[in-house]
Image (cartoon, rainbow over the protein chains, first blue to last red):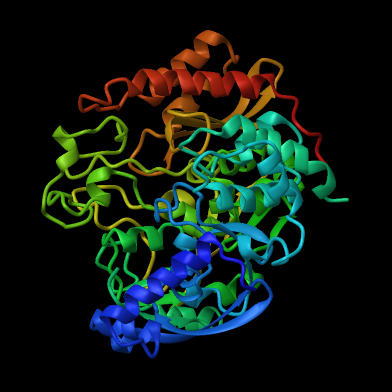
Length: 198
Length: 341
């Protein structure tokens, strides 16, 4: 695919900056650990992300969030507070929404993990929840949006999107500092019909 | 976060062996168990907890997450997730206060991660405990003092405290467990044992760094709540600074068995107020065998906070506790409990 995206520009730019200053790293995980003087702290970790298995040699301290973003270049999952207070890092673990910033990668090996990148096929149509967020204008800066959408998909699947109040309560773990809350509720209401459990 | 060894326990007996060094909740315990991780990873990032070994317990989950009613007991596995217990029909019917305390706690994501055993052992939210740039914290560093005594203590405890520590127990479920005479099943290096839930957390007593009465390597496998008419008429009221996803500044768990107006049995727990999960025997005694009138409810609430001690910014708490408890009693009185199955 030759189409230039914001993502490919950023990734290319970062790679360029990296080669300009350092020799290319042989193993990003071991390299980072060595830099911190903890080579012995590296573990081989198998992660099952969006149906694909990945094997990483990473520091045991690596959260699932950092494994996704820093080692697998899956940067759709966002780091907001990194303390379990904002919900920007929400992913699905065994089909349930969880916070990847409070999850150690080494502790969730070989368990199915779904991220925003896996919600719709690469060149296929958007997931109904993604479409609803666009159509309802349910974001401004967009930083919390992947977490909001992952949480929203689970919220509907759990059967917790039956009223505005229930949506607000069960989406309260996802903060939006642009305060797009009314539109987020509207987006979930738009998407809930087709997504609700039978 | 500091480096640590990570091992996964294969079964309870191996967990007990690997759990050497878990201590009784001390911040510097060299070993920590990892269940849901929502407290542990957070506090490791903050450098409050600094384990050299983390023992993963995920393999114990499936054998210890049952939710069932057996005889006259509600049994909740120590590894049951908060979300699963909050929505379970048996819990909703037999002991709604347990379901409510869980549904009103944390966020949907955290409730999917956190286990009941980890939940009741969660650490205080005291800023001076969580922020290591403050030197004075007897709970984190024994003998260093307590910055909260004269600091920002708006949400610090007023019951069960001493001058060594005024940190508040932040949980919701623990308040209900304390009120309902819950029993805790433990497994550890010396085999299984049972303790009352109210004996699980240590009082401050000048040594707040010792938080539990657990033996090293012990794991909570199950909670058992005796069921009856009162648990079916139970309620949890939570008052917060925002409408959702927030710790309590005040809460009350109440279970009530009425014969007409007369209180046959009452159980009272207070949250957002105390050093540990708090059962108010004073409040219960003030109501027992009396008609559940407004005046008697007020008198019981006054008795429940009679021993309160405030420290400035939390001077508002006794009155808020009183009103929260009266409201919980009113709500329990107004309930139509589920019929006995």
